Image (cartoon, rainbow over all chains, first blue to last red; front, top):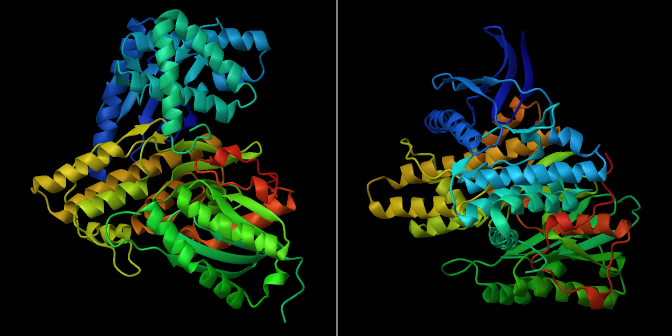
Length: 212
Length: 339
């Protein structure tokens, strides 16, 4: 078995049999538009960085796929195949109550990441998988970083908000406020208030906002 | 003899350093596109000085547009103007001229979103139907695509625009714009001679970008004096444009649109064009670049978008036609796009 499940912008994701296991091969593509020196640096940096951050996330109590092998030369990571569906695929078909519960759960997980200095860097509903057991597994830590800065946390959640607005515009507001509720459970009132202020500041900074 | 038309729209653009007037027919024929740019003696655009320039040239540019189009003012059916986003003093000059014309001719007035106009003129001149647009200029860095009634912003700069970043860098390097050669074009020329890549901060956050760190680091390299200007320009361009291409690629992969449209002042850069073309082809998307005349700020884009707005009842009374300095692209509903 060797199925291309996704040709993403950054990498291709293959589903393969590997020593009797169903695994995910994540192979970063060389980007022909970048000069080789720059491309190589970015590729190695991201291939190395991603599994390290996934391990940190696990220690923080946020489910991520198990890493089996990392091959820097080939810019490939071999990891567990997580059964389930992307949140992006399920979110619009849920009842309002289910949707809010799910978003709260997402918010708690993001809170756990942030509490442990992990910034995901690409929090979209395509990068979260809902397993048949109702767990949410976070994937694609390719752009993640370590930071405790309010700024980094703000940008992380701002991205989430933007992703919701562009893909789930009908429910974007209720989803985001449920995410914030879950986030507050982990990060506490004061931190959450500061983050929300930061998000507003980032939105204003993002060139043109009516309220500015 | 020109065929009988439903009407004509005159559009005024004055968001920044350009004062432009365009006239288009209701079916999208561009009859005139006249522009007069404010060129600062030194430094960047001074909003008040730019607005003075606009006020001085406004009547001349409008008259020339009528002459070029070969029509009389009374043949105009709609007056459109760039209502925002942009520099307040500059926007107000265009708005004032448009209000005066509309009220004198007794014609409807339409306020057009500047970013939206870039996309619409880009589509009509390049033939793109449903693109992911990368709009890069001195004031804007936006990746947008149509989704549910609006052009949604998939990525944008979190701080300064890429064109601004290039300009400030170029001025720090002591470069001066020449006739018909903006700073970006001069950096491009010098970068072509660069050979050695010097690592610089590459800041992509999801689909958003940040250029301020790159700018600081590049300026520091200049002052260190260890590297040739050619190599610094080359590395600077490679990093900035790779970042832009990466976020455009993300938006393209996410939306699965059939086209990539490059527009804005920075669209003239051949290296950026090449990167995006390579990227688009890898995704089986068609790459379109808007010709310079319609990629930089221009009046024709306002006129054409004015037509689209007017046909959908989006004209505004003069007393509510105040300028909107921070008007976001994704605030505007676009009823004319049908997919």
